[in-house]
Every structure is written in structure tokens, then in C-alpha cells.
Length: 521
Ligand SMILES: *[C@@H]1O[C@H](CO)[C@@H](O)[C@H](O)[C@H]1NC(C)=O
Ligand SMILES: *[C@@H]1O[C@H](CO)[C@@H](O)[C@H](O)[C@H]1NC(C)=O
Ligand SMILES: *[C@@H]1O[C@H](CO)[C@@H](O)[C@H](O)[C@H]1NC(C)=O
Ligand SMILES: *[C@@H]1O[C@H](CO)[C@@H](O)[C@H](O)[C@H]1NC(C)=O
Ligand SMILES: *[C@@H]1O[C@H](CO)[C@@H](O)[C@H](O)[C@H]1NC(C)=O
Image (cartoon, rainbow, N blue to C red):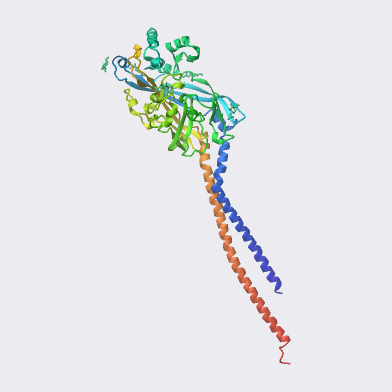
């Protein structure tokens, strides 16, 4: 009569027990899940981001890359020479007046896109410039007086030629009435004017040394489709190569500099960079007119329009440093020590048909101040107005805002045999500076970036907190119940043995009653 009751109890307590063990296992699994999310969630998100941004024809990012939904603009500031005659006749310091901005808006499009089967794309860049008088300081036909770049290039180059050549040059320039300064409109200076010297050169110079044009303009031939064929990596095979140039006109290296490293052109065009950018990374941009890879280092965190946080990358201070202060720059000085560029200038003559063109930052920012004071009228450089920078969104590697600011200077050498320029001293003469940039991206693009930037971390925190809380609560609850239960178990067990003991005593009593102990008989 007591047996069944006892069995039911053990059965009850064992399912009860099993239930709590399962609960503990679930709780531990939840906790492990929380830890996994904490450690590995970013790997998953990065994989999603990488897939999303890789340049696959038909995808959104591909469309944005091929035809950027932005309005880049270029603002130019010309150094108008106001005392050209005095400068040439009695050796006064040149006085320049910075005029501008003259603003053009641009549309960029990659055309003739061909998908190669090794994870690269080839294209030509098409840039169309449109003058914006409403944003400019004056019309395109404002007249300015600037150094005659073709002439001064020719005279400076003739410095080491035979004397009779220089004399011949002087008489030709006399006949053609070529002067060291030209009076041209801003539009002509940029887009081209007929230059008598170039026209002559075209007719007399041997074919292989011929300049490609008979017109001269600083942006000559740049309005339209470029003939440069660019091959870039799409990032589908290796995201670390996303946007990186594989070949430029079929070449993987430049021919101009003295080391392979300085001849590299495996940077991006600046619109995208391999994603997941950390502050210690050096970004590299290749631009044909810059004639090299431009390194960019992290400067600070900034906020961009549409509230997308970004990292600001700028060229390091040593980028155009002289070889004394930065010996690594020696590779950019193929002519050897005495003719290396002064601090803050970069000699691009090898990319400019041997014209002595020197690039710097506007107002000689990061250059020796003596360069700026060689002429009168250039205010001291200001970081906010003259710095070159890229603001990139680190997760996706997309450029949100750019201000590519460069100044074009002409390195003139004094040549006494040519009477027209006999009074033109050795000087780095500033011509103009420009700022090519993008102020902001359309909302559609920034929305996606904000999403990629903000949502995954939030999901991660929510997941970690909920998994861990749930796990902990279950674990605590089940442990508590287990302990209570095992306590009850031992009480049950004790009660059971008491009962048995009592039963034993009763039995004995009964037995004693039926068979009284010996001794009575
Ligand atoms: C440039 O300087 C010349 C000579 O001083 C002057 O005639 C001309 O108006 C100036 N151009 C502009 C755009 O200010
Ligand atoms: C050069 O000549 C101009 C007048 O033509 C004069 O104003 C100026 O002071 C002279 N400068 C020097 C350094 O002689
Ligand atoms: C990829 O293919 C293109 C076109 O065939 C070729 O020019 C390029 O060198 C290749 N790049 C690599 C890295 O193999
Ligand atoms: C550039 O070319 C387009 C036509 O292709 C023309 O409409 C535009 O005016 C040109 N821009 C300049 C600055 O010459
Ligand atoms: C610029 O570089 C060229 C080619 O290396 C060299 O011949 C020339 O002297 C350099 N110019 C200056 C001003 O340093």
C-alpha cells in the first residue's frame, strides 16, 4: 500500500530534474551565443559590406562608381601679374593679384567599360566642364597677365644648349614678337590659345620630339573623353584591391622615377578606397597630372554633411619635402642632387613634355616661406583654405568630401643670351591654383553609409544584451531551482528512510506479538 506512492515521487522528481538540466544547457548555449556575437559579428557584417560595395555590373554601387551622382567642381584662382613691364625693365619684385574663383562644374562618367574575367574593369574617364558664371568672380573672358609658359619653358630648357641656339631662339622670338608675359583671357589660359612658338615647333621640330598640340592651355584637351585606358580591380576577388588601379594605359608602373616603389601607380582614383579603413592606414591616390602616387595619412575625425562621420586624410608634411629633410624623396629626383626640388615643390617636368612645371600646395602651403615671398601679393597660407584633403567613410571606403588643392608654378631659369628674358631672374613663378572637389554625396548614398555604419553595431549590442540576459536569467533560475530541488530530494530521502525504519519497528512489534519471545514458554 505504501510502494506506489514512493515510485510516483521519484518519477516526479526525475522529470523535474531533467527539465532543469535542459534549461541550464539552453542558458549556457545562449551565453555562448552572446559571446560569439560579441566576437564574430563584425566579421559577418564586414563580409556583407564587402559584398555590397564590390563593383558588380548592375549593382547600385557599380552605378554610383560608373556615373557618380555628384557634382564635382573646380575653382581656379589665377595670379594676375600687375607690374610685368617694371619687373622686366628695372628688376622690381613681381607683384601678383590673386583673381578668382573661376568655377566650373563637372560631370564624370566612366565610358567604354569592359569587364575582364580576372576581377578587373577597364574604362575611359569622360569629364565635361561647364563654366558657372554665377559662382565665379567674373566671366571666363576676364583678361589676365601671366608668364608665357611655352616661351619660358623653351628658354629655360635652352640654358645648357649651345650658345648659337640661344641666339637663334632670341631672333626667332623677336620676329614672332613673343614676350615673356602674355595677356590672355582666363578661358584661353585654361582651354587653349594659339601659341606661335608651339605652332612653329610643330612645323620644324623632328617628328619624335613633337609636342602634341599647337595650342597651349593648362586644361587643354581635358573637356571630354580621355584617351587614357584605366584598368581597376573590382574587389570581387580580393576586397583589399577594391578600386586599386591595375594598369594605366597598359602599364603597371610609371617610367619617370628611379625606384620601382616611386613608379608604382597602384592607388585608387580617389573616389573609393579598400574598405574598413583604420587610422594607421596610408591611402594612395593616383592622378596622371600629379605624375605619382599621392599618399594620404589620417589627420582627424570630421563630420560631413548629412551627418556621416568621416576620417580626414591629408598628404603628409613630407610629401613634397626636399631630399635633405626627407631622403626617401630622392627617387623623385632623377637629375641628381643639385637640381632636386626645393622644399615644398614637386617637379613634374617629365610628365609635362619637359616644361619646368613645379607643383606645390596653394600659397606654398607646407613649403619654405621664401618661395612665397619671391613675388609680392600672396597671402600666407591658411590650412583651412589651402590644405589638400579627402574625407572618407571608413567602413565602406567611400569618399564623402574632397578638396584637392594644387598650385601650378613655373621654374624659370635666367638666360642672358636671350634678350627678351635676360632680366627674368631664376624664380619659381606661381601661375594659378585650383581646388577640385566634391562637397557632399546625395542622400541616397549617405543613407546607405549611415545604415552600414550605425545599424550593425546597434543590432550587435541588442543581440549581445538580450542573449546574455536571457541566458543569465535562465541559468540563475535553474540553478536556484536545482539547489532547492536537491535540498527537497535529500529531505524526501530522509523521510523515506525514517518511514522504512518505522516500518521495520512495526514489523518487529507485530512479529513479537505473534511469536512472543522465548522464555514465556
Ligand atoms: C589683371 O591685371 C591687368 C593689369 O594690371 C588688368 O588690366 C586686368 O584687369 C587684371 N585682371 C583681372 C581679372 O583683374
Ligand atoms: C621701376 O620703374 C618704375 C617706373 O617705371 C618705378 O616706379 C619703380 O620704382 C622702378 N623700380 C626700381 C626698383 O627701380
Ligand atoms: C586582367 O585582365 C586584363 C585584360 O585582359 C589585363 O590587361 C590585366 O593585366 C589583367 N590583370 C591581372 C592582375 O591579371
Ligand atoms: C565642354 O564640352 C561641352 C560639349 O561636349 C561643351 O558644352 C562645354 O561648353 C565645354 N566646356 C568648356 C569649358 O569648354
Ligand atoms: C626637373 O626635373 C628635370 C628632369 O629630371 C630636370 O632636368 C630639371 O632640372 C628639374 N627642374 C628643376 C627646376 O629642378
